[in-house]
Image (tube, rainbow, N blue to C red; front, top):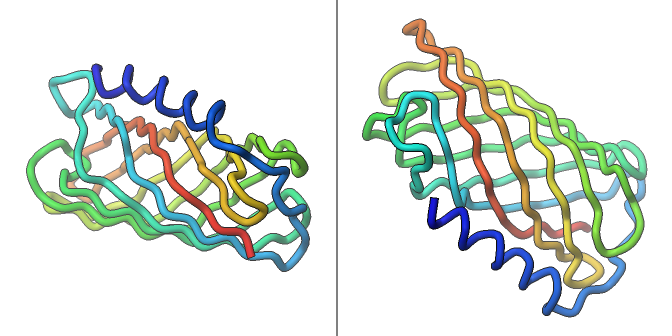
Length: 172
């Protein structure tokens, strides 16, 4: 819980202190490359409310219009989806819709699905997220998101995970 409470002032500090610019207008055919790290996660299969692991991910996106992005992503975790020690890898696809396409602060929603390869079992993951991109330069943004992941594993386990993550994106 302490990590989550520290995350709020950090994101506020970045938003208020770091000089920002409006950022490029998104156009059809633009690309976005992103990297993120999970700051806080909560799983239905762990005893504690919040557990911090070394989770990180990569995203590649392609804009179909000025607000709609489709892409592929992968996430790596040192904790399996079921909360036991081990590794977990997610490979999937996503659709991101930007609610605002101009300015330096751009909120968005995301939906996606993919496959998970886990120490315990393999399966399917469904994702839904809310986030915001704060542009630091015309091409680079600091992204913060809250994401719900629902895992259906081959061994009949069903796991809900909530992640709060932050990262950087480059729009080309």
